[in-house]
Each structure stands twice: as structure tokens, then as C-alpha cells.
Image (cartoon, rainbow, N blue to C red; front, side):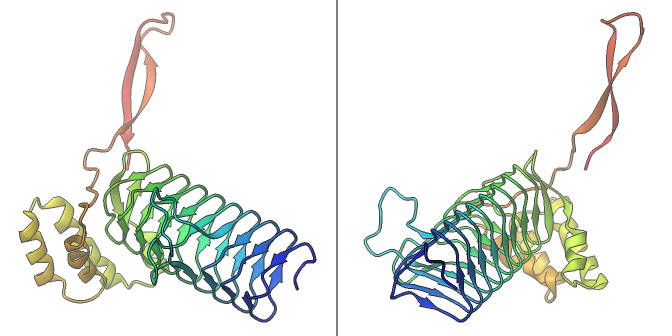
Length: 285
């Protein structure tokens, strides 16, 4: 159903059971798959392909031009898979170069105000929480999770099943299966809950733990580390670490080995306002 107040190009290709709300705009050179819902005041701009069963929320803009000082004469496309939820005011930009595409996989959740810049590659089952930002050419692996307000520098790679805390500022790659603290921008362990939800077996989780300790706690030189990873982990999820680290042109985030402490204020003399002692309560992380 197309609302009479929607603006839909006659050349746009719409599948069966597509719903387009009032004041939504669908430009030419757009393909929308079966069962999609384009809600009020959203814009699907030229060069966009949507799979089946996607929901595009109010005010979202899909297929906008790249935010770049040198605007391309013939920009690329946006290609989005199926069953994604794109919430209010999300922005997704086209690729910079002809015959390339900003791509998003299947069953992702892009929450309010999140941004996917030009030439990003976002996998399946990814969650971008409110106001999280991906710079140009960022790659996000399957089942990764970015907390609210997290910002990822262009050309960075977020490994699959990684979990990034809110307000993180990432300028290096995040290896697979780890958790990143949003305050310190450092790794604080493995995403054990995410691994279980992804169906990773106990044996594979044990191998991932061994690889994690090898990477972050042995102090091996980089080439020796890669050689050891190749020798010890030749199959399964743990085998993903060596090629990931080799491809990390910006380097990769390190572990937070000396976590900050929680403190409390203690008065030596309750009658005095000056005698104040700060003592640690416990280790965080």
C-alpha cells in the first residue's frame, strides 16, 4: 500500500506487499523487495536496493551521497539484505566509486540516529545502538554489537561477535570475539555471552580463550605471534585471529591489563570535614 501523500518514482521497482507511509520519498533507480515497510517521512534515494521484509523508520535516509569533499560524478550504490530494522533518523550513504556498494547483510538492527558511511560493509545480525557512527570503509563482522554513541574511524575493522561499549572511540581494529570498554577503549575480555548465543561450542570457546591469552598476555613479537597462531589454531573460530591481525593495517586494540579501581570516600574523623581518605573498593573489569 502506498499512502497518497508519499512521493514514489514511477521507475522505482517495488515488490509485493510493500507499504510506503505519508511523506516518504522513493526516488528512481531504487529496488524494494517484498514485504518492506517504508515509514513516514523516510527517504530511499537513488542507487538503493533493499531485500525482503525490511523496516525503514521515520526520518531515515537510505542512499544519501557520501559525505566527502570531492563529490563523485557517478557514486556507487547501497545494497541492503533482508529482514533488517532501520530505526528513526538512521543515515546510510552510497559508496564513493561507481560499481561499488555500501552493503548491509541480513537481520541487522540499526537503532535511532546511527550512521553508516560510504563503502562500509556490515555483516549479518549486527546491532548498531543509538547514535553509533561508522566512518567510511569500515567493516563490521557478523553478530558484532556497538554500544550507544560509539564512533569507529574510517578503514577500521570490527571482528565478528565483538562487543563495543557505549561512547567508545575506535581508531584501530577490534579482533573477533572480544569486548571493548567504552571508557578506556581497551579490550576487557572475551564476549562469552555472545559466543554462546552464536552457537560456538565449549571446545571452540576454550580454543578462542587460548588464542586470546597468546595474543594479549605472552608478549610475543608480532611475527612470532602470527607464526604461533598459525601452528596452534588451524581450524575453527580461533583460526580467524591470525588472518585478522595480518590484515590490520591500522593496528589492533590492546587489552586493558591494569583496570581502574572503584573508590569510596572515608572520613577518619566524622567530626572533621577535612580529614578525608580515598580507599579502593575492588578491581573493575
